[in-house]
Image 1 (tube, rainbow, N blue to C red):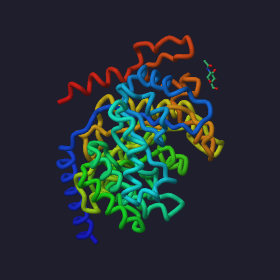
Image 2: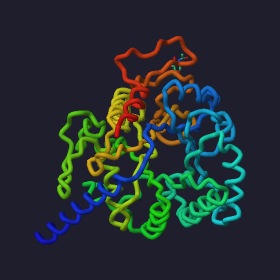
Image 3: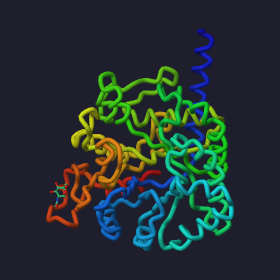
Image 4: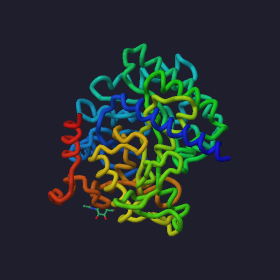
Amino acid sequence: MEAFISTMTITYIFLALFLSSDIGSIPHVKSLGINYGQVANNLPQPDKVLELLSTLKLTKTRIYDTNPQILSSFANSNIEIIVTVENEVLSQLDDPQQALQWVNSHIIPYLPETKITGIQVGNEVFTDDDDTLLQHLVPAVINIHNALSRLGYSNIQVSTPSSLAVLQNSYPPSAGSFKSEINGIMYQFLNFLSTTKTPFWINAYPFFAYEDDPSTIPLDYVLGNNPNEGMVDPYTKLHYDNMLYAMVDAVYFAIAKMGFRNIEVRVSETGWPSKGDTNEVGASPQNAATYNRNLLRRQMANEGTPLNPRIRLEVYLFALFNEDMKPGPTSERNYGLFQPNESMTYNVGLTSVSTTSTSTPSSSASFTLDSSATKTKVKP
Ligand SMILES: *[C@@H]1O[C@H](CO)[C@@H](O)[C@H](O)[C@H]1NC(C)=O
């Protein structure tokens, strides 16, 4: 037993070192992103949203479809946009001809005026209730990538965002591993990412872990408050002062256990609801503001995770707006930093001038993403 543990420890330390040195060479663009979900009937027009993003100095966003109105409105702006192939379309894209046609009709018309930087093929397909969907994922990803290459746009990255439920184990981070039933297709997918130097995207919500177990998980740790005791991974001895980084490192370890060491992990969604049902412990404007402020502070400091401290973790916040037509518990409709009328749900610390109200810009006491952008530029 003792021998087993020490072998495990060495393996984990080895993986940790291997990961840090390898990932270190991956070039990446530095800016916080925000998810622009549209499951609502009361959102501002895309040109207004563009103004809002500009005011916030946010330059990266993701949409959950290929909404033509948004893609046209964002033309000739500095916004980089990631689009999504809806899960419903996935099965058709098994066929290379159909994939080419899809790219030709949904992507090409907007290039290069609209800066489409990525295509997410489906959303949380690995854990979708419809388990016939997953068999189409890798063929669709490959077909879209090939179509883009053929049309001269191989720089557009093709990936898919996964739910944290792809993991069998996530605690401690070094125990991170994928569920065995998805291993086969995950291997094919990771192989594609590795070959094309494309990131793995994870949707990671410390809120879900907290609401499941509020009596044992410290709120400071899930919110990323500083300082807090956090946790130490018994194998790597790495100290974690927030759960989001522990989740991301668990994904790094799961990927490494599949034999891949050069795939960057990015957060496609994270956030905290400002409102929830009575059983959704932790959902409040205070906690939402704290979680997102801590995240912004850490992004401004170019923080990486304990496993890859020098690689600034790329994060897309969820979400820009509250979405009134989302099904499910109350929290689902209340992740937005903004109300549909563009007033702030709570003050997260982004400098904002509402386009529909007379409120004044935040005082100098709050930081802005502008200073973040300036800061990241001077980093070697
Ligand atoms: C915007 O909407 C919120 C929520 O419905 C409301 O509380 C607020 O007063 C509205 N603000 C403006 C400026 O209309």
